[in-house]
Length: 258
Ligand code: SF4
Image (cartoon, rainbow, N blue to C red):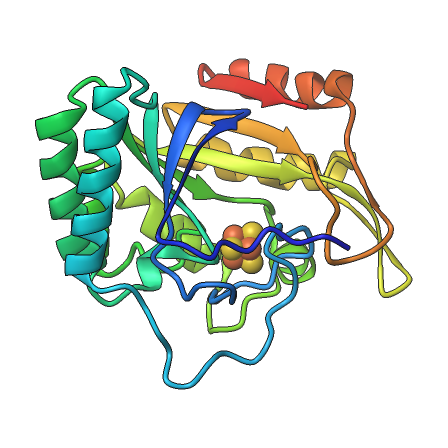
């Protein structure tokens, strides 16, 4: 399979299905994945042994490289729609995440005031006040919720640290009023066992979670690239739309991306 590991701190701009033109910020090790999930669909591939010592970009490196890039994009009149924290793993694991967020917002305000700042996160660390407060300063933070029950969480996301659906939901409920949930829908087999989070009982438990959280928006999407787990397949747009309609019936905006 092909994986998408970045070898730089600043990535792009690239075209994103969900966000438009996106300038990426990779706070994770270069060419290595660092995450506390091991999602079966992860575009970074499976985890591999990390380099020792773990080389994370410093606040100063992020600031300098982002400033240079924004200056160049401003001069070329090609500022992106969004600056997105994503990269080779879970961005909130960076120990200086909050400080870096402050710098990124300052540079955005200086060079690209019409560009939004977005974080894609698996939500496992939003219970930490400093992480939650940094995320609340963004224009959009998308929190991952691919499962409505413990078994599906373990199957799809394979957490590598102690967590549970209940802990995730409880932390999300305390996140604040601008909650946006993103959910990957897929089906296939993993280690020979069938997996399908579009099955009616799986959708039912997931919808109960969505109803409880009542986010301002839910983003439903499906596979776009090869996955580390073999034998997984995309969900078609009609199926995504039928689930989205049930979200909309709860009075919540739902968007689908095939
Ligand atoms: S949370 Fe994101 S980076 Fe981490 S394993 Fe899942 S898809 Fe990959």
